[in-house]
Length: 50
Image 1 (cartoon, helix red, strand yellow):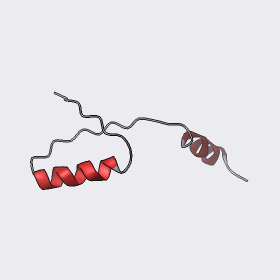
Image 2 (cartoon, rainbow, N blue to C red):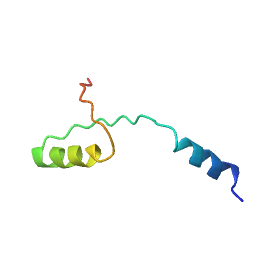
Image 3 (cartoon, rainbow, N blue to C red):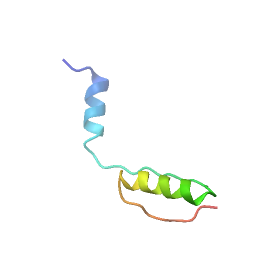
């Protein structure tokens, strides 16, 4: 039998959600690696943040 936390997590993961990732990486190689890694999780939307 599942506890209430497990049921909550299972239902939460079924619904779409947005994660915002902000990074400031000077090195092009590291930035490209992170971009590729994050693209494997979902769509990328490039925005500026000041």
